[in-house]
Image (cartoon, rainbow, N blue to C red; front, side, top):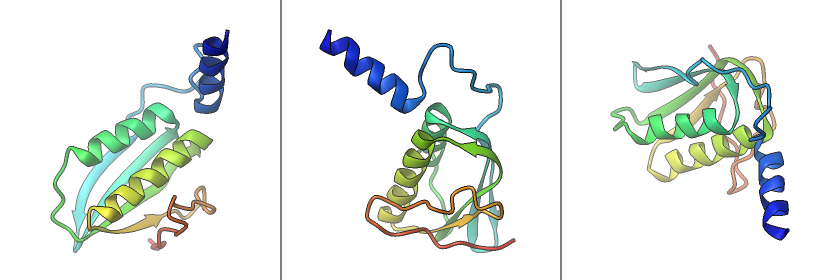
Length: 126
């Protein structure tokens, strides 16, 4: 009984319900490109648990030459609670790996994003 309750709670908190009508078919990472001294990682669509996991996988699989990584969420339509937490953890992981990090968020979808160390990622325009 306790095991069932634990899994029900995890499913609810992470948006993993079988009948959850989450849009699929769009890769969360639209592109990764060098722009001057920055590497810009353009995200798109809905950022939930599975999208955030694929973002983290894509980031960890690469070796970036730029000193600053810019996460561009201009094309993101929605970020759920779990996606927000995992995205914050990814940003902190990049910072701890020695990269300067920044967010391009003109729609302010992540306006209250606080990393687990209590800091915020700087914002860039454009």
